[in-house]
Length: 289
Image 1 (spheres, rainbow, N blue to C red):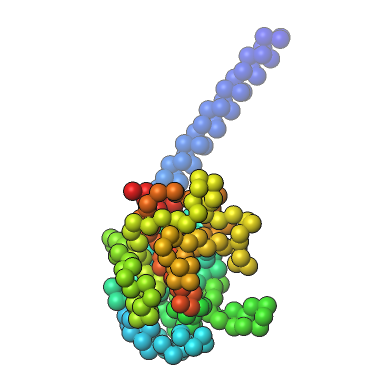
Image 2 (image 1 turned 180 degrees about the vertical axis):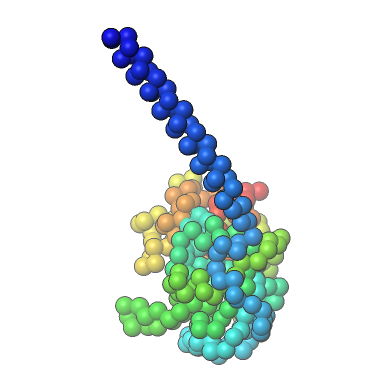
């Protein structure tokens, strides 16, 4: 009797395993037939209805709104207008916070977006089409920016980060293109026109040294941070009133020691009024010679 019960239990368990295996194979087969091939063209992000109906260059845009930009005001776009540019900087290591930099061959622009992980969608080299209608153009410290108005605790209003929801309706990802920085002309360090033309651009300054680098001083420590949780580092022989390397304390490389020798530094060269601010995108942007 015991053997009879034991054999029936074994038979039931075996049939159960066979049933589960069969169901699993059927489900896998169905899912294999229904699964879509993952998209790699960026069509899963943004707004595919954005089209090129009135594309203007970034240079044209900055010229048209020069008074707005350099007077610290802002204005909303009220007609269908697009810009198309290639991403040159994103938040891959946390130093460009909630923004991307784009260029189109005529100029550069910072686009402010309240969203993390932008580098996953907008890789360096990704071309994007941006519908400006409904967005705002203005500046922060005379750095041209596109976004939406923000009022700080002091009652000052300027263009800053648009919400993720708003951004999703205003851009479309296009193909990939090659991106190369241009060399920063140190002889034009104090040239106002040079700054207007190039602020926000991906550039490289060559053959410089960090002031005070001693193997212990880091890119950005909490003791030196300003109200924006950033630290400015000077370069030898260049006044900090003219140019600094600006690093967020939240950047992945913030606590890494500054190189002590001569380096080439690549980054997004933004401005704060009349001071150049180099925003390193990732630690590999600093190359020791």
